[in-house]
Amino acid sequence: MIHSALLRILLISTLATLLTACGSEDASNTSAPTSENSKSYNWKMVTTWPPAFPVLQEGAERFAKNIQTMSNGRLNIKVYAGGELIPALQTFDAVSQGTVEMGHGSAYYWAGKVPEAQFFSTVPFGMTARGMNAWLYSGGGLELWREVYKPFHVVPFPLGNTGVQMGGWFNKEINSLADIKGLKMRIPGLGGKVFAKAGGNPVLLAGGEVYTALERNTIDATEWIGPYHDQRLGLYRAAQHYYYPGWHEPGSVLELTINQRAWDSLPADLQAIVSSAAMAENVQMLSEMEDKNLSALQELKERPEVQIHRFPDDVLATLQTLTNETLAEEAANDPKFKRVYDAYEAFRKKDDAWTDISEKAYLAIGK
Ligand code: CA
Image (tube, rainbow, N blue to C red):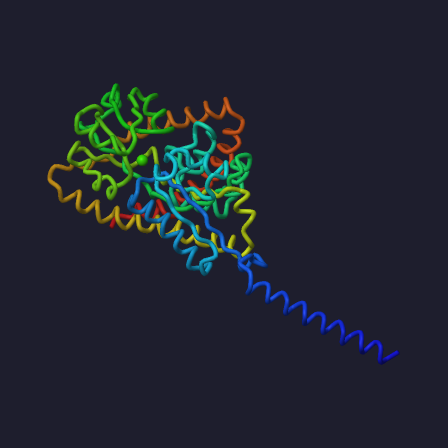
């Protein structure tokens, strides 16, 4: 009896050794992967940026490269700028439909399809990068964002931030609301709606057309991004009055979008690599933006033709009142918009109260 039990154990262990041997043989002799740990993924990422666009397209490319390095070549992402594979503003649809696995852009580009997405990018007089990161990463914002994109089979992540933008370039001084009446300005999105309520005439123009339109006086003013990108575009040659702050874009969050099915197909370690790389790049892009802006501001200040002004207080106060009206109107007409608006506002109010006695109080100390 003992003998046959021993024999059985021996047989089982021999079989197990054989099976293991077969398994490893399979892994080394065939190209088909035997486990998800050896499987490699070749993905495409499309962005809304022009080719080689500094900070933003560069950041998307660095993010892809970091993932390739961290995954030891198991997740390879080929990045295409806007128009290289699909038109820039079809990024969300391409990710949603699974034509590509990843996209990089900003949520307010999809306002026509998902109006409440704008809160995950920026809204006029809304939170800065600091507040947005606090809301998204820690205050429930990212969970809400994922719920909003779920019906589109898209998983969003924050991936960069422009920081506070500039108010824009004007061909005349803005001393009162009367100076805004009838002013033709390139200012997109909710900012444009508010500008129209204030009597302005918002114009929609792609980045490539902005300089020429301002230079030829087809428009009287334009906003773009911040000192760095604005100087690069040469806007100071087309208009001399440079206004701050960028009330309409206090810190635009850039987004990584991933097709839900593609995301679900990744093993847990690659998902962790993607999440961590996105968070790292979020910090990197914002840091680079701030660093380049502070240098470019110095350069612009040294140009004698450039005059830097703060918008008058009463102009800003009116724009803020009109923003609150605009957001409340949209919320009244759209329950989905209202749900995100309410969550955003609840966080923003607490953030304002805290900022009043932290960053704002500190920065208000005369230096
Ligand atoms: Ca802008």
